[in-house]
Length: 427
Length: 145
Image (tube, rainbow over all chains, first blue to last red):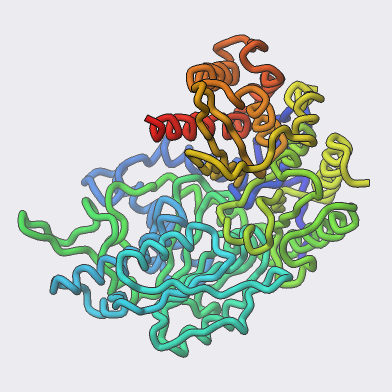
């Protein structure tokens, strides 16, 4: 374990050269929404465009070859990062699309099966019947809730969910899987509560009834070592932009035999095997799920982000965030009128720290923090049911990453106290 | 600081002591508007009167700007006609887009919302109740005809 050299890290991020509102130092505590990008990532993208730009998997020319090599090498780097095989990684535009890719596989398999159409071998695992159950949790981001609601609406499957305890954990005692449970979709780390879930415990129960497990890893892959084999899940989805990588690229990993059994989601060029006027056949994964000219520069940028994180060491990243989370939890819990929404201890918890301030709306807290150069997120964080569960209209959320340090925690605390003074609440 | 242009004393007064908050049982139209990015909500009811004016009542939750703005709306738009109210809504929008100078005759304390224009993310907060009023007013008039 080695502590991160935050000053050295910050020097790699051009955005920290600027100031915000009234020439304040930028205290960026919104990495849970999107992270900042180091020069190494920006340079990798620029280098691709300046020297190797071409449409991958097409063209007979040298540039097309180089672009394809760079794209596939990026896939291999990304796969290694989560302990996966390259062919089991599908690029999507973001994690939301990756989750939709899985939910639409169920829908498309169900529709085609009902019409007696040809499906890939093994696709029956994706065919739903009325009364089948899809289980999510009450702490899901809308991206891992709404697609499943829609799937249920279209197929007659029933949506169920695992409830939460008062201290912000999954209520594992409320798990009620049955032989009708076909999918269990849940988050590795809650983007609002910060809770890190016991994935293996849920997987064991889900697999005992032969349900497929879909893990939203948006808030885990950027922040801790993740190994898909160790987790034992069937699919994981995450986005590149929350882990120092570019916008516009997300990843889906799925077990090879499952990806092979899935009908395509978005269709068109690149994803086909043969095309006739009447019908078409489709390529093997991952290409089956990558229609159109893919985001090669973004893939190259994401691979550079992964190289950067690997240089830091994911154990060190996790330890660094754990320390800042502990500091923030301790500091916030002693401010009168501040209440943390989520686990109040750093154990099995990530760096998303949500809180409410008595007498102040989160929007107003965020506004005063912004005036102090502190960038946080306010609102329901695309997890509206979580807010309802804890009976708050919204929260203010700080998230910490590799470029944050103790001074950022102090700035957050000072900003909250300033907000209380400004509105005449608190002590 | 700029912030004090948005959080003027008059705005904070409306926020802490809102005017007219609470729903009337009697209404011709009710709307529920939300700001999906932050969860601010308002339920607003309109009752047309015989003289052509519209009585408004509301209940809401949200940030200081959305709460103060609803309180100001009650001051300005309770018992006005659809035309008068619509003119005020349009003027508020124009003021927040900085295409019109604040007119106190139309907006009353609402001119103090001008500071919100500097913070684009907050414009929706200021407009939430006024857009709800317009929606409900049109529905209420439609039902009366």
